[in-house]
Amino acid sequence: MIDVLLTMMAVVVFAMINQRNLFAVVVLGGIYSFLMATVLVALDAVDVAMTEASVGAGLSTVLLLGALYLTKGEEVTEVRRPLIALAVSIAVGAALVYGSLGLPAFSDPQAPIHTHVVPRYLNDSPKETGVPNVVTSVLASYRGFDTLGETTVVFTSGAGVIALLRRRRRSREESEK
Amino acid sequence: MRRDIVLRVIAKILIPFMLLFALYVQFHGDFGPGGGFQAGVIIAASIVFYAIIFGLPATRQLVPEWIVESMVASGVLIYAGVGLVGILLGGNYLDYFVLDHDPVHGEHRGIFWVEVGVAVTVSGVMLKIFYMFAGRRRDEDNG
Amino acid sequence: MSLASHYSYWVTIFLMIAGLFIVIARGNLVKKLVGLGIFQTSVYLLYIAPGKLIGGTAPIIASGFRAYSNPLPHVLILTAIVVGVATLALGLAIVVRIREAYGTIEEVEILEQDRREEA
Image (cartoon, rainbow over all chains, first blue to last red; front, side):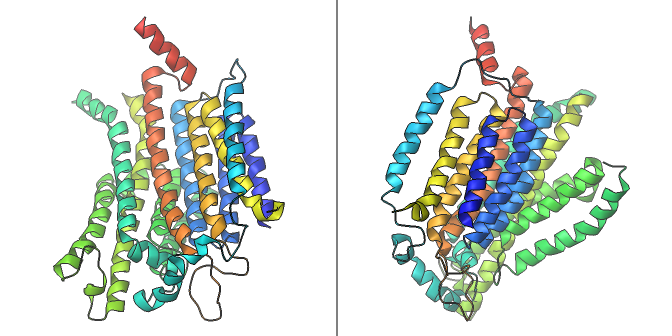
């Protein structure tokens, strides 16, 4: 099941690389995000899947379409073939595949990821926080500092967008005066 | 899309349920999938949906810009404030178990307020970003 | 090591290098941001796929279940997704400003204008 969905994602990405119409690329990106959300449900990451479905397929598609409307971009075809980029990508991919050969097999219960820290979260979280959803308790309680930092990053990027896009409107208001 | 009656009627029916679902995701996040990040994004998405159907000026009246801007900052302040309350009650920064006589209840209370802060900031930032992008072209045309 | 046990890693790697390829090879700034997004989502898979236990369930503790998938990567990636869309918006805002300053969002044309200005 998961393998089929992953293959579909690879196909969509291949279409996104070749597609020159940016509107089509953004719509394909929405399809890609929904496939990703489905894969995440299959991988038991329900919280993440919910976030990816609403953020990836919803808001970021809206934002990309808004930016496309503002930039009126359609991609030009390059004259030279991207041979260097292809070579770099394939070299990086080969190195990563070589590295992946040493990783534990999919769903191996003895893999290091399942033997450190997490058993404690799963065993003690209901007793210590009274919250059955371990993702929530780890997010807000055990790793509260981490989440505070992430919230601050979201705040900062919002402030950045305001700083970048606000100026022209103020100058218009001034010119009206 | 402002003249399409089907979209208008469907949007009016759907948006209250989207907001209700966001609240469910927010407050049921302790027991099922969900939490502040998801709820914040769903709130923002439902208002973006309203803006796509009914236009930006109507949305600016419904959710004024100053509310959105204060949401952006107040969420982070709620989160940081929970940490400070922990210090005032004799714990360390972001210690929740001091928030109530029963440590488990205290943890639960801390998680609740932290998630509220996250949802407020996330929905505020997403909405503000959408307003900035959607309001851009019109300003340019006028100016 | 077999196809079944490592397939998810290899698809992750394909998505990663596809994103990298778009970022390097394509000159359109919006397309570059889409490529960065693909690269980023491949990292979601890289974190979440190893946390899955076949026969396990979502990490919400309830009676009747014994095996749960790993909740820690879920927490890390959950926040990463929201931060990702916020940074995407920041990138798009910069692209919008570039378009207003240069009248184009093609890398080649922007560099060309810069070179003409310097000369």
